[in-house]
Image (cartoon, rainbow, N blue to C red):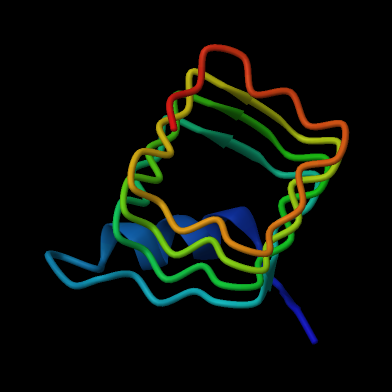
Length: 99
């Protein structure tokens, strides 16, 4: 089961993390605009990114296993060293993104 989160609450979590790894698994992030965020090393297992619009987002070394990226658009995203096992990318646009 996934938990819906408001964008402002997500920003609060990211900005208050300091140097700790962000722990936000199983969040429903569908239809969100996720631009210019650094989520490197975050634990985001099981998150729903369906229909998200994201630009210049860093997900380096993040755990993105079991996530849904269906119908999403990630422009210039950085997925280097991210764990994407068992994630689904049906009809996803990953223009200029690095893996």
